[in-house]
Length: 204
Image 1 (tube, rainbow, N blue to C red):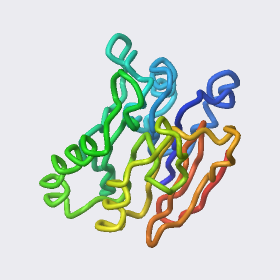
Image 2 (image 1 turned 30 degrees about the horizontal axis):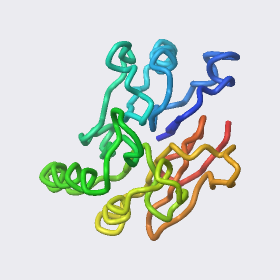
Image 3 (image 1 turned 30 degrees about the vertical axis):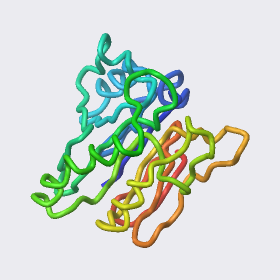
């Protein structure tokens, strides 16, 4: 299954210079947050692939302009062709605003998901906006990752962990992907295509 992961900045390759052929073969699109809802709606018009999303810390606009035709997976497990996808959007709380959480608040969100996780027998892909603590995050509060995401990775060993929030063009060079135990970690900044079955990763 070929998945297009996106986050944080709209890709000119897909939006400004779009050709329908660029989405050929894509089975699933997953947004890790902080993208214009009109961009997500635009993508749905050129593909039959489901477009899933979690909220980023700048996605308060979704309440006024929802991404049409897209599926919010925040605090849900969405199953596509047998692949179980758990969504937990938002960033560390660093000021007033929507889709921001303290570490304790994010732990409570994860606790709310435990029954659903057990019912599904775990999950294959963890989709978040923020990274995990000490895993591609930064020390400033706004870009600090959540410890509880490490707990989820260590307990359930999903095949993939997708996140956004830390832009790869920031002064610190954030990795596109990493490996933690059995889990391939992917920073979905702008766009990244990967094959679910063989962990093949592409920038195209």
